[in-house]
Structure formats: C-alpha cells, structure tokens
Amino acid sequence: MASKEQRAKIAALRGNGYNLEEISEKIGLSTSAISYQLAQMKEKAEEFIHSEDSSDIIELMTKNLSQYQNKYVGIPSGSKYVVNNEGIWLRLPGTGERLKVKNSERLKKMYLDFRGPGRVRLTDKKEILAYWNSEVPNEDLDPDEEGSTVESISNWCVIGNIEDIGGEFPSITELPNDPSLYKPKDIWKGPVDGMRYSSDGKTIFRSHPSSPRWLIERRSSGISDKIWSMFMSLTDYVGGRFYITEQGAFIANISAENLELDFTQVVQDMSSEQRQYLSGRISRTGKVPVFLGIHKGGIDLQRGPSIHDPLTDSQIKKLTSMFSLDGDNS
Image 1 (spheres, helix red, strand yellow):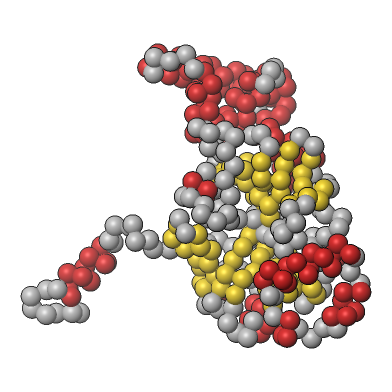
Image 2 (image 1 turned 30 degrees about the vertical axis):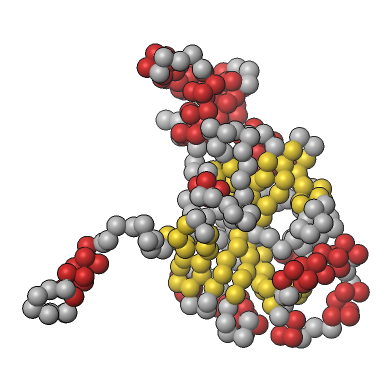
C-alpha cells in the first residue's frame, strides 16, 4: 500500500512526464502498484470534475498534493537555506549577502521536485521542511519574520530526511558548521542557526505569537547532564536561548564575561569572514555563540495549553467544586 508521500510523488512524477518504470524506480513500488494508484487518482479526478462542475485539473492536483503531504506538527524551526535553480544559499543577516552552500545537490533536487524556489529548513531530527500553500503555490511565509501569521507555522511539510539524500549535510566553506571541528566551550564560527529553543532552566520551549507554547520538562528532553550543566553555568543558572543544528551542534548565546577565553587569540585564528559574522552577531544580540557539545535525536516538544482550548473534565470539576453551594473546595 502506498503512503501519502508516495502517492504525492507518483502524482508529481506522472505530471512531469515520467513513465511507469521510471516512477517505480524512484518510488520503490512495483509498476503494477503504480498503475493501481494512478487508476485510483483518475477515478477521484472524474468524481471531482463531475461533482464540482469544473474542468480545472490544476486545482485538483494542488488539492491532492496538499492532502497527501506530511504536515509538520509544532512550531517550525531549523537551519534555514535559500533554494533556487542555481543552488542552495545561506542568507546572512544584516548584510543580506548569500554564501554558496556545498554538498547540497540532492537537497536542492528534493526541494525543487516538491515546489519552486523558496526557503528550506533542516531540523535537529534531520527532517527537511518546506512551506506549501496549495491555494497560493508561490507563497513562502517564514515563522521568524515580524508580524507572521498562523499560516506561517501551519503550512510547513516534512518532505524528507537527510538520510533520504544520502546523509549529505549542507556545508559552508566560509562558516564551518561541522560540529566535529569544535570542542565544548569553543566559540562557534558557523552560522548561528538550527532549531531554536528557550529555557528557564526547568522547561525547554518554543513559542510563536500565533500559537501556544510547545514545551517539555528539561529532564525529559534527552539532553545530557554534561551539556546542560555547562549551559546553566555559563548562563548564571538563568537559562536562555540555544540552538541545535541538523548535525546536532548545541549552540548557546553566552555573555562574554562568562567565558574564560583569550579573545585576541580566538579572533586571530578566524578568517575575515568569520570575524565579520561574529562581530555582526555580537552587535545584534550582545551575546557570543558558544558550542557546548553534540545532541542527537532532537527534542520532542508537546503543545501547551491555549486560551482557545475547551475546558477539560478536571478543570470543570475543580471549578464546580469551588463554586458549590456547600463551600466544599476539596
């Protein structure tokens, strides 16, 4: 039986001229299974055209792709890259310049097979995310942009995993993002990006103006005690912002006075691009990006309560007891 993702790919490949054998090779299903899925799609297309009194097959295709997508659950985040027909690029904050991303041809193909040029995100679980609105195919909203709407977090899809593209992680020559090049408490010379988290020391969460918080107790997060102890110590046991990249690099924003480093030597060991990037980062945040270790597997956040949620049975029971005539507040 074909999955939703496989059916979406079958529709997309067939629409782009691939024959049964070629689709079978790319999807991993037999030609008879592909033929069956196409027959089912055709039957639904006939029903759609008849019931909607419409011959707009493009409209049906966009609805089908939207239905079959693997929607991302939660507040989307992750390392962000720009994808176009020329390649994949890292867009620098502040200057707006773009650096060419290497080791990314398979990622580019996967993304452009799904939609046109736009922004891809890679999560700390190695998921590959793309924004898709079937009603406005060229739309490309970003949850991090000021004034972003609920659509900017609800229309993201998981289109694959790093393992699906041969385990090839994007790399940036000017700003090295391979965590194996760093030791704990080194200043991070790569892009300060990845899944963005905040913590008060007890809970880890991600928030967005259009959504309730997604959170988890720190003890249940899977982050090692060694990494967490360093993070809390360097943030004066207050907590704060940290990132986890697609390769598992744990990067925290740390005040310079909490670091026992010879900054003169550190800067001398950097390239001019790395110095400029670090200078811009510190100017914007007042903090230094510091590598604290490698955390694999991401963090499983759960949706927190919302003002829009209906009351639970336990909440109703508690309120009822508080306002009961006999005054029993137990």
